[in-house]
Image 1 (tube, rainbow, N blue to C red):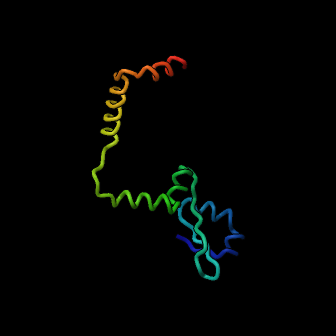
Image 2: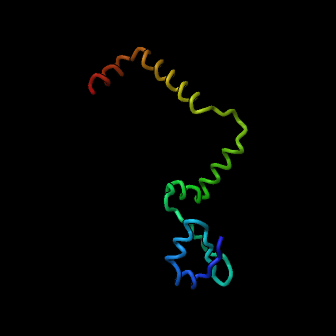
Image 3: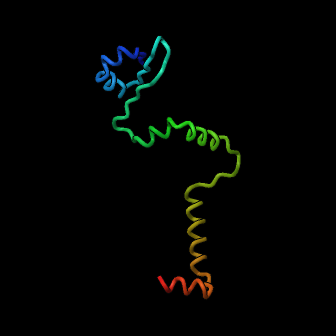
Length: 103
């Protein structure tokens, strides 16, 4: 991690952008951090933005603290497919059959 004053950063912006692809650049004003320059070349921009979103990080933290029963993706998918298959086999009400026939 490199610390750079704002005035120096203005003069060397292109080089700092290149360097930010390898390490974070902390911009400072009067010795105090004010911003972080992070390279995103070759990364998924949506993922980078989500990881910096405080609401998203809070949601992830809440999920990690969750003590309830967890269900795997495969188990959820299997259960959903079974429920959908059962719904397809159930007889339709006359009103629903008419609505479907109109489409």
